[in-house]
Length: 177
Image (tube, rainbow, N blue to C red; front, top):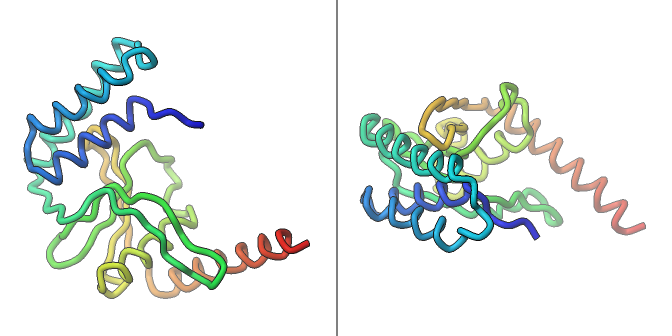
């Protein structure tokens, strides 16, 4: 079993911030998380870093004027009869009439080549009834810095679906052996 760490506490507090619009409620959420996990999460520098990340994130969100109609979106999007894309999208923003799905946390420089991002773009488009080519998908650090985003074209979305379906078929063949 994987136990939640410092970043989980920050993410949950960010979700509270977006749901309530309240800085104090977000801070209280993080404080409660850290208190409830005090026996495991004992590194004082990391605890302080979590509080600092939340404060920086909230400052970024206020300054950027980000419009976030949904957060902590749980995906369970079928791509074939036997396989679905699952996971959590941290935030869905509304930007000039278009949607932007964002995953919060650290990410590698080559994140755009990861198969999951075009699949997430398609899933969010379908979930909210938007054309896929009008949805951006991206990553952002927990402190609100380094928002990176991309909008995959229709061909890239189709190729990602084909690749994902082929992978699912291979797994299905192994499973049925």
